[in-house]
Figure 1 (tube, rainbow, N blue to C red):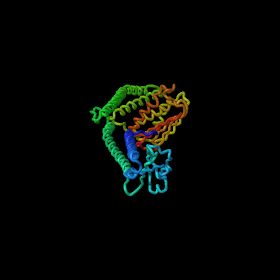
Figure 2 (figure 1 turned 120 degrees about the vertical axis):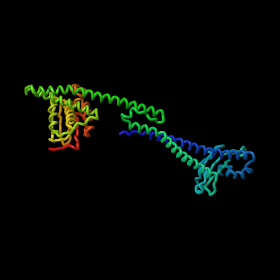
Figure 3 (figure 1 turned 90 degrees about the vertical axis):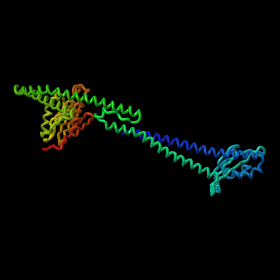
Figure 4 (figure 1 turned 180 degrees about the vertical axis):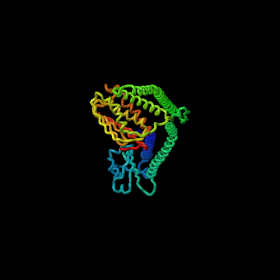
Length: 429
């Protein structure tokens, strides 16, 4: 299952990542510049000492080097052992500075490190100016430098926290209109479609709200047209259906018993059309009273519908298995008849070979097709009204009545099940 992304989390996460990247970059840049400044400061001091030595000689300058905590070594072999273990004589190039950690036992014990500057006298050759620093009770230049470096990190953390607070505050301020738009769109209904659009502070959000409202108006307009069409069609069909029913009743008294089966099918079909038009009117006009519930034998109704539609299996290699338990129910009989008739008709229309299982248990009708299932694209299925057409009506009726309806489809298998649940049901055997 693919998790849906949150735009808020994405924006906050992106802003936070960019913020941390910037702060970290500037902190490391400041740290690097800090060390470069220290190196430059030490190098300048050593270079100045080198100039004085070239002008005045070693003996006059050496005592004054203590001012900058430096020592003069005129030979490589005189350097502290840690420096010699770290750098060879050839590695210490003239005019360059180097750092060496204290690696001898005595230097480690005192946490002593070294800064080395290699210089060259115009007459007496190469010499070395060395500053050493170690832990002590008094604050040295190096201790001050370490403290300042720690301050850089502290300032960076404080700045990061402040920027996070500012970003969250700005995001909350900017997101409020979006949340308002979301809440407004959720509560929209058909009565709100003609009301003016509230302002959401930003032009882009106002245009989005206008597009949402226009889309809903179009959908509502289509729905209204469809409802009106169903109402008009159902209303106009009442008269011809009544004519068919009345004339069928008249013919029932006039024709011979041998011709009764076709007439009875006509009567049943006209009754089905009458119930269907009444149901369509009820579904599209909520102000109409709902069909009244009455007590009837559900098993008899299912058997009648199976017999009424079995002509759909003529010429097909289909076995019909019916397992129906006798039971009386209190339900809107018109709606139950329409739902059950659609399910049975769909099952018989959409199979060419196989088995149809029709089972009526306690409060539940299950119809299962096993075999060659026909679709609307197959030659035999092209003239049918399709699974979907009848199922849409069943879904609507089930939602209105609170019945449970489900379907499942697998290769060469289709199952439809509906549970008629009502507090007024009287289930008997």
